[in-house]
Image (cartoon, rainbow, N blue to C red; front, top):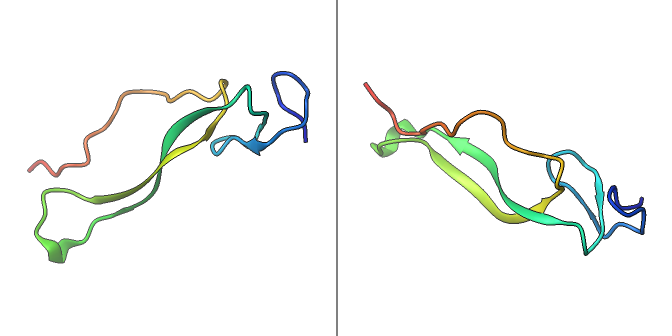
Length: 73
């Protein structure tokens, strides 16, 4: 697989879309692995497991606005 930007051999793939990336053309982003809403813990909102610094290409961009994970009654 080659880098989507420069066509040199890729060193990894974008976590979001799978495009190939070389060392010179990768970015990093945080990735939510799972969201758990454990009702027995009497907490304000869901628990989120996040992996920091996953590979991301320059083509993938978040859409929309951030949403709150806190419960509001």
